[in-house]
Image 1 (spheres, one colour):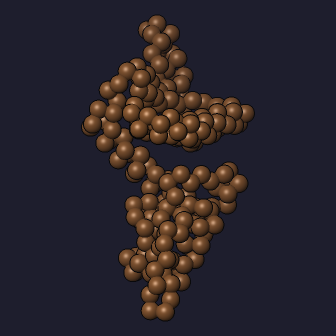
Image 2 (cartoon, helix red, strand yellow):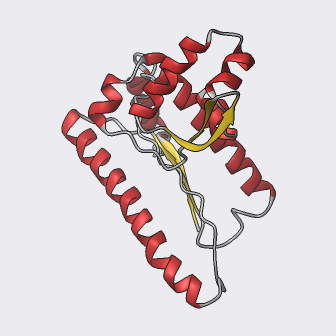
Image 3 (cartoon, one colour):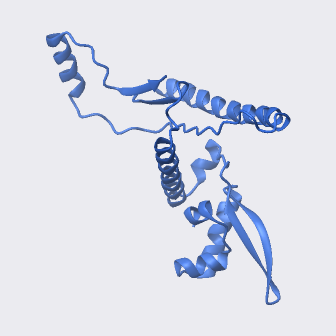
Length: 195
């Protein structure tokens, strides 16, 4: 349901018909998603003496750590899958239309080994960067309005912090052994492109 509501607005009745499940089940899940502030009511339509409510997913929804911890696993999985599908589409479209051609673009991927203290600090840095991005967007909106949107740039920003799969046991030892024999210091933990 969340995937559908990311793409378009729909009512619980429409969702029940689409997924062929009882309306009561849909209504329950709609209330869970509303409580988590992942969807919002966008319009009401009168239908045969009743009012049909139409919802849409909130693209800018942010779930705090405490709420995420209480979110049902199925909802988490669906949200992550929907977000990754959208990210893949956005990145693919950008790559196909020159979105990575400018010299000030950034693309990086890294695998880090952290303890809990380092993890917490990195999570706070990413949250600060996201919040600052929203502030910058608001500041830019006024300047763009005054300039009749001259110089407007649409930015795609993706940040992720997640538990990575553990490496193959003994791989680090083999890598260190190979380095000492060959003298090379190739970086294998990730890749970064920043022009």
